[in-house]
Image (cartoon, rainbow over all chains, first blue to last red; front, top):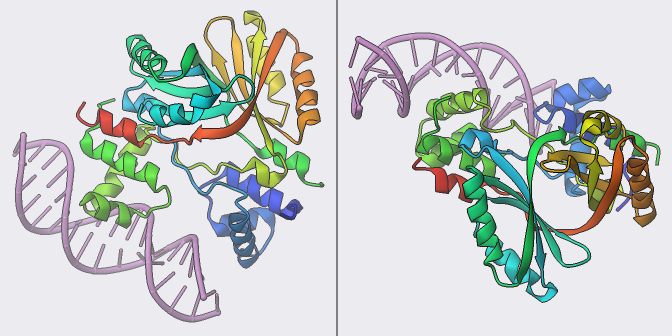
Length: 156
Length: 156
DNA sequence: GGTGAAAGGTCATTAAG
DNA sequence: CTTAATGACCTTTCACC
């Protein structure tokens, strides 16, 4: 995959900053023609440079005020089956496999402390799970952003 | 804020599943009129039930093949200033404050192992940081989803 | 630059609580 | 009576070719 040029990174940056912005608005901001922006966006989409759109739901609005990160210590050979088991737990919004001791990092939402305890127990009951570590997320100290990264890579 | 009814949750579910879907498509899928869906969406947006759109950039396409989670142990009174310091590190895409020992969980991307080592050193050099734990993310075992959760809360 | 489609707005009507 | 949903029509804007 050939590297992106400065225009590509500036375009990605603008799209990340204003995901709802139209092609025309992006073109004006970058000083390009609509057609150029449109062609670039099509290429970027082919390269999977951005993961299309997302609609992130606000768990608080759904009555889930608690967010927690649960680290799961799991036997290596049980990792795949565990991922399938965990997929049945709706409160798990996201899960990453980590290096080292076959760990899993889960992003979990819960109704309250008791609910979180229940979910944790559910995870502990899954086959192959050794132990879990739960940490409540108090707040998002650094909201998701990607623009400075793009700026740094512009000239590369 | 009044709770969401079943129609709201079904709408949120459909929007999460097909973020690019048009209002008309959503209306057809839910068996509602276009105006109804539009009005509901406006209400949901006012309630901040979903976080508008997002364009998640693919770090791999930008030449950052490594994703890591770094846990930062930090003195409580230095937490706020540390967050400001970390905001200057472009490779940190996201950061959550955790309960307990004033920890931070960071989602970080890097060019390679050496780059990750450098970033970790940069974090360690910040004021108030006691130590860090780094775990490489191998793959996303459970991609972000929210629909089963919505289904479970429908009747509430 | 042209064309088809989607979004946003208004309004009158109708159904349900 | 009040709230919500519906269908119709309009204009503007956007995306695609």
